[in-house]
Length: 312
Image (cartoon, rainbow, N blue to C red; front, side, top):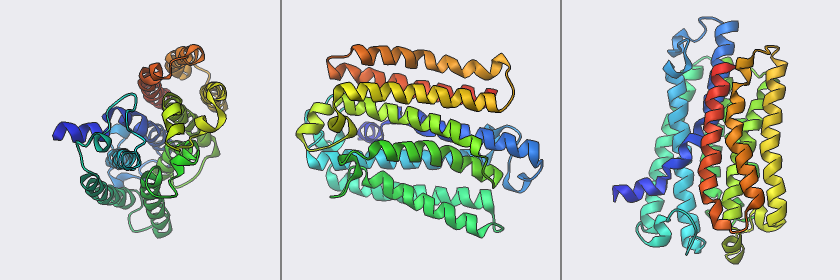
């Protein structure tokens, strides 16, 4: 049974989900050390972001949101019949391995644990001195939980009306990167929206691949994803735009920082498999063959996040 729950949690999605946190926390921590040295001593901050309590709380909270979203997706698509005879990984509710009631209970438990972790993030980042920020991030945390569940659950599930790409872009990109950056800096630098946009676009590219793979069955079950709405060829063009847009945003950000050392461009290594992915997508005819490309783009995004954070 443990194996079934691990499958439902979809561990392969976790590197993508924490990519924005890695970028936001790293850039935020660097900014704080340069501009306000010592300001985080009371929050257990360290010069290296991966040694920071705040960083790991952000990671755990994001993992909680992702697992909740995966459970909700398994539950929502399972009870609707969308996952019947699906391509790719087996879904637990649709296969009958986990009952809808069991999955619903797991969603409730995961939501509670994730909210507790989010409160930990708020306490460590803001303490008792920034009440308004605490309220704002509590609202964002609750909104993230609702968004994770409403993707495929309920009559107004936004994943069934073509809005999934927008929510993935906003939550995986802007909220993840800009939000975690703000936890460290207590301020907004609008340049940070460039890497946030890059992460959001790459995350949307993963969803787009998933929807391209499932286009025929989604259409049959009334799941009107963006791919279903715009068609296969336009979905390919959209995919190219997402990856090229992420590359452009990254290059603009690096150039705006004024440091043109070759080390600051090493993140371009992550775009090599992404360019290869564009070629595969362009030539694709049999949609189920896109399944391995999901892992390629997700892990490339994770690699991008690590290289970009270390070198910028």
